[in-house]
Length: 344
Image (cartoon, rainbow, N blue to C red; front, side, top):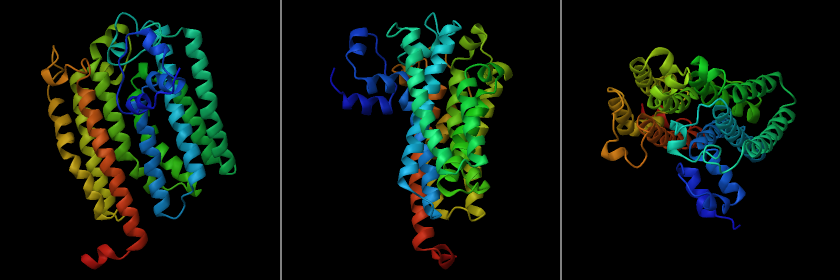
């Protein structure tokens, strides 16, 4: 078994489809983990951590060691959640019979790439590594009550997202909270020792962009979820209403960003995020209509993904501009604090 660095890179940026068990068995451990945990999606966790890290650096609180340990731990925790998600849905019979999940990426259990015992072992090892990172964060912050609360919220969400939160229609909202204000505000707190509500608010736009993917994915598989008794938000409120909510979430991303510029938390350089308007409009446009009965030409390569493909592309584009803007914002506030006041 050779280390496949090209697969590491590929699996980190796109969902991998694979049907040959021999091909799977030939992969190295890291490649298997990246594919099984859908790291192209879990990369959003790294984005959230980078956002928090840049804000901490802007305010003079950044430190590489805690940042890297916490970021790696949270990335692994997200992957751990996905392993548990697949295990839970498979055990409950949700992922069987060519269900949506196994159509867009590798599902080791459904495809018999590994058995349930192996899945549990991967979950335990991943969970252990993620927990070590959490323990470090607790130690680094002097076992602050805020860190304890954040640790507890993260653990509960990881264990309860697939069941019962997703079945109660709360999974999408929990994803918004975790990958937005909680994770970004939490990583900032670990680095600074300060819980800043403006930082938490600054996490809202990216949290909404992550949640928009999840809502879109659940709209994509609305009929399958309803047939399987999985009460996601779109199943609970209806497919059409869920599409409207997702459109509102996309719009709010830019409204909140604009508010943070107007109240002075961000410099006007953050208007750069509006360069993602084409992807935002594309998501809003496709959400105006129900999912097509058959794959349009542009979607044949990744069908049955439809709405979530557009939302994912928007998240990547918006996230990239957001991080670029934050870097510029931090540099301006650090080295040219009177730059904007001198212009206006």
